[in-house]
Amino acid sequence: MGHRLDPYEEAKAQLRESLDILGYPEEYFEALAVPERVIQLKLLVRMDDGSTRTFIGWRSQHNSALGPYKGGVRYHPDTTMNEVIALSMWMTWKNSLAGLPYGGGKGGIRVDPRRLSRGELERLSRVYFEALSEFVGVDVDIPAPDVYTNPQVMAWYYDQYSRIKKGSFFGVVTGKPVEIGGLRARVVSTGLGVAVAAREAASRVLGGIEGARVAVQGFGNVGYYASKFLSEMGASIVAVSDSRGGIYSSKGLAIDEVSKVKQATGSVVNYKGVEKLLASSEVLELDVDILVPAAIENVITEENAERIKARIIVEGANGPTTKEGEEILTKRGVLIVPDILANAGGVIMSHIEWVNNRMGGWISEDEAKNKLVEKVRTMFNSVWDYYESKIDRDKHNMRAAAYTIAVDRVVRAMKLRGWL
Ligand code: GLU
Image 1: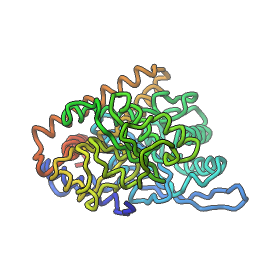
Image 2: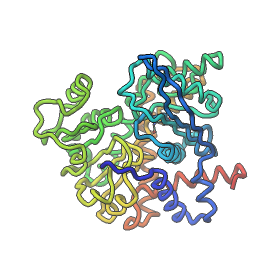
Image 3: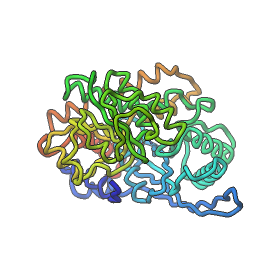
Image 4: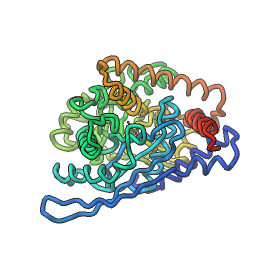
């Protein structure tokens, strides 16, 4: 780990692969790789001690052929403009693959939010959204949570925008708290989608999810709920990790207990009664059936791909596997359920929330969850069928199938609109 590969280069290499498979002309590459607009914002924030700090934030609006830009905003100390651009491109493919009427966008602020007070975080969030207010909108660009942002941050965004525009513009942001237009099912949704994708993959490769041994890297919103749903489905979560390290138990971890310890002490490593403690990177190389990277980009590379023992990798994070890492895994027959399929549950639930907001309606938690499960299952089936029937599996992984379907839909929309 510790790689700072440029995620935009990774995203472009993946795009290139799918355009080759589709046999599209070279001119399409740039037409799809270059974001429509990237906004960089200087954010001046008054700190609690009276000093002023300058932060930098971005919003990349990658492609709007299918509809308004849609994607989260991350707060992370290592975030760069190119990372945000790559993530916005991945959102374009994710939304396309899911059949949602959305283009792709992503935002980011270079900050470690764990080191800000609540008041500082609120002021930073409001300054960011105020600066963005002329570029977002219910039918223009719809942000949502991502790494280290949450419903509270979305509440500040929603409130700031609604103050400026003088109204209640629920649909300008998704992943909001339940009291102000959010859905109860949104917080669990990405993890639930990851678990459903893992179950579908396991039924094809392992003969079922029951008893499958799973390691999860990252124990934030996605990692925690993926672990929880997978253990409810009968899998055994033998290891989880966060930025401070990992824990292992051959009999399987009690996920809710681990979560309580993480809430109380800040890390899973303080959980007692585990067989051993691991470095975060070791969690990736355990002898398990399924590996779920659910943290950040570029953690599976050519340096560790050879040592990965899982038969299935389900990408809870965006962009966890590099191209070189993937080539090694493909040769070794490891199935990769790609991020744009595996973690689409979040944006699918965002769409349900947005539709609900726009109708001024309501939907029950179970109905929303059932819709999500059905959608992820259908997506998995169509990607799997394409992968089995049209993809050379010695050369390409399941990602190529997902990308090819997703990129083709965007190309067709661009052609219909006269852009290509
Ligand atoms: N941040 C999530 C993702 O990467 C969700 C985006 C959304 O709901 O708009 O897919």
